[in-house]
Length: 155
Ligand SMILES: [Fe+2]
Image (cartoon, rainbow, N blue to C red):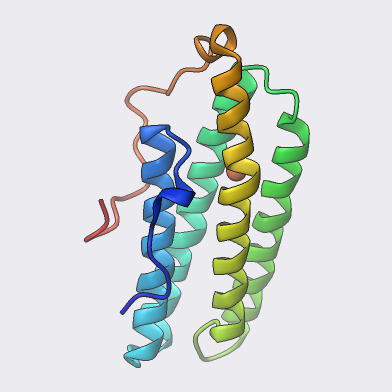
């Protein structure tokens, strides 16, 4: 069961960051499936926790690239990530209090935020990078750094 699927409008043309985004989309779908299948609060909470961890990992990786490439919108982009992270933290607190899943409203919020953010702010960065090949050489992926855990079934 999928809440939303990957398509080319999400592509930044950066294999590593695209992979991260696919994992995030996969985790949101996993969370949706767990909730719909009635797997209970425990299963949903575990996936939600993993979504938070992976989001943090991904934002750090993306920002590191932007910083290294001297992206002029780095600060604004960082703020957007911070805002989403704060929101996820607040939801986690709420989640901890309730004996249940985060709810379809929360899932909808995460899905919409990610979809909008990737297609606008992230793609904007990719376009800027493509227009500045000299600076693109400065950005480098941190070799050897692995995400917290690969999402099963998401490639
Ligand atoms: Fe981003």
